[in-house]
Amino acid sequence: MEKKAIHLLPAQEEAIIQAFFDYHRTPIWIFHHTLELQHSFFYDIPEHLKGSLAAHIQSLISMSPDPSFDILCYEKELYYLFTFERMNEPYYLVGGPMLLSSIYQAAEMKTLSFSSAMKGKDLNLLVDNLPVVSLNSFSSCLRIMLLLMKNSTLSYEEICSYKLSNLTDSFRNALIIDLFDHQEEYRAHTPYSHEIALLTCIKEGDLTMLESLYRTLPDIKYGNMSNHSNPVRQLFYGCISNTTLATRYAIEGGLDEETAFTLSDLYIKRMEACRTLYELHAVNEKMAMDFTRHVSEAKALIHPKYSAAIRKCIESITGNRQEKVSLVALAKEVNLTPHYLSFLFQKETGQTIRSFVEETRVNKAKELLIYSQMSYSDISQSLFFSSQSYFISVFKRRVGLTPKKFRDLHSKSNR
Image 1 (cartoon, helix red, strand yellow):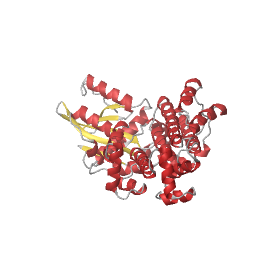
Image 2 (tube, rainbow, N blue to C red; image 1 turned 120 degrees about the horizontal axis):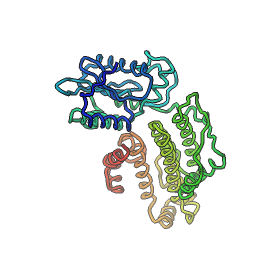
Image 3 (tube, rainbow, N blue to C red; image 1 turned 180 degrees about the horizontal axis):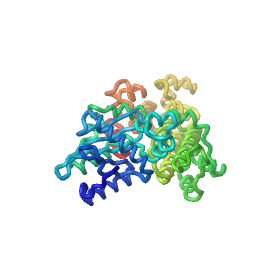
Image 4 (tube, rainbow, N blue to C red; image 1 turned 90 degrees about the vertical axis):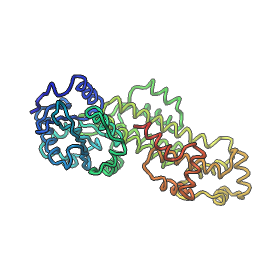
């Protein structure tokens, strides 16, 4: 049983931890060095379930090779553990469990480390309440608690490279590919005309109309898409369906497939991390706006005053992801000589074909730096730069930042 240690935490410190839990929803457990539970910040769930989990946390402390500081990382869950002192007495603080995915089938739940002591119904209830974290949010939670309880902390890089942890591998393995295998099963139960109106805005790249529709149309309603009654999970399934449709309409509107599917992956991951209906609605709307903006930008490249030959060249350059674009191949495609195509392209667009190809590749590099974990070398090769150093040089000349500084800047803004 938990022993409420009134004098263990000063009132202000306890209030900070409670506010931290209310925001991040990461369970916090405080044990005496004798492994007696002193305090916990947890959900309003049955006491027997809370007690079972507390006993599991206690066993994790006992098994830790270094309980003074440890990151306990499993395939689909993780915890942090460290010691601190109050009134000259040592205590353990444990954060967790935290999940790497919010979607679990019954068989998958059985692989969680705390599942063996729980019945199926209890396990479902617990999993539905636990937070889903990214590497950034996990690191942030750990650093804040270290700073509060020990007045010292670790850097993001130190946490990611912690010697006893397989943290990075576990996050890398927390994939959501299975979601795409079942997307056809999801059905929206909002009026068809409303759905088509929103999707048409995405296809046309019409941001103004889309914003107007979001202000005037009622919220999209989704039917019962699983056996779970949790409204957040129900909305999550609906948002996945919406993202799938938005991806298809964006591609039909002129957005290249690689960019469309990259955006789809990005937003599904963000939706997975949402724990409230408000968050899901906000991310769902931002997803539609982002797809619409990308389609609008893609359409802007194809200016109506361009000749048919130049429009076809631009489409070939922006849509080509399989091979390096060459002037000879483009000229052959539009039945012009290379010399005349170069002249006509610069006359109509105001820039050379080489400059346009370079600009297109740099724009694609920006997306890969923001939305993927590809290495600089892999990005360079995939976009047909002659070398990584040349890629860095071109990127810096056009963007004003190196690829590393550009990625770091956007990574910080997304944390």
